[in-house]
Length: 171
View (cartoon, rainbow, N blue to C red):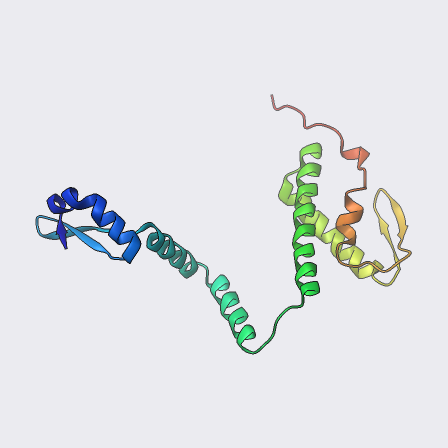
């Protein structure tokens, strides 16, 4: 423990030691603990731990992943690429939802919900090369099976002329 007066005199040295040696210094005022001086890296680690405490699903996912590693379960590079592609497709779908929302004046969350419902409908009815009726477009026939990433690839080429109206200014 260091008094505020002593800590003030030694602050540069205390700070460097706290960073290098991961020492902690309790700073007191009138004999009572007031604060703690820790190094930046230790502080960042403490923040990360505190964040994980508030995210039990993330902790469970990390534990599951570590257990799988101990069991020898690993993803191949192709599986890793496929998982990253799915994340990229989700990001593209979110961008598309935001663009459609901006052009139509409908909230992004609503557009995203409709898009996910549309995606699920497409997967359900067209995964085997079937067809589906889409209001405003009519009957759509899929010539090949729908695979992961196809919707995102198709969606960037789809023009939605009836959604090009700009949002009317509120008066």
